[in-house]
Length: 298
Image 1 (cartoon, rainbow, N blue to C red):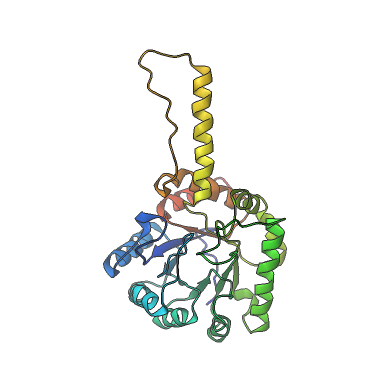
Image 2 (cartoon, rainbow, N blue to C red):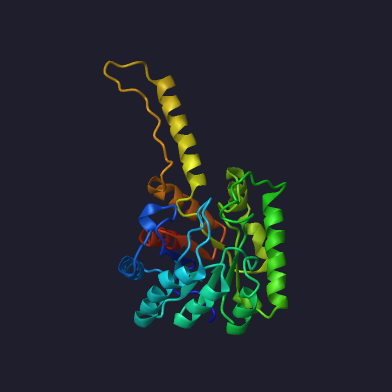
């Protein structure tokens, strides 16, 4: 399957469908088939380009789920989507057994957050099926990735590591046109690493591979919002004399993913300036609205 860009959009919207009880954003969790299928239908109505189905949380500190359980969580939903629509479906997994079952059920794309490092059989499977594969950078595993990650130059090191995975994929028969790269925002990255990656996204262009960015509601955005809230409260305290009845100047916290939609839209707008090809998001409708305004102004 070739990922030909839709004439209706310059950037594709990939909707996140978490068939899990423990993903970091509670409102995205779909613990049974009915809720997952309803979420998929909602995304389709909102104009999603790709639905990314996963049966295993990759939040920081999470542990792996057996392939059999991932298959039970994801395959029925993939079959339902495929029965009713031709919208591309990706399977978010590092396990080749899960990927194979998903492809057999009608999935079109493999989304491997380990960039082929998690399962030696993943690359031969993708090569045999000749399907697009997303290779994402991650330092360590979800269980360990945020344990003091360090880079001398995050962008250069991440690009070099991903290109090694790309070269391995090419050597094993995956076609160049079937490779999509994801720098892995939040996967073994500090706040400044994430910001550097986003600021320098155009440095990925020489390789010519489509770029996917998934930053939706992630914790680095909460840190930025907390810093801004502290600045605003401090500014108010310095600018306004004490008023009778003025309540204490509490600093709001953006620790919850529920409060990060505006920050997500702002960061995704920046990604559009850098020519990102796919935005992986929880909020399809709002991202579509962002794209509608963006494209109208081009």
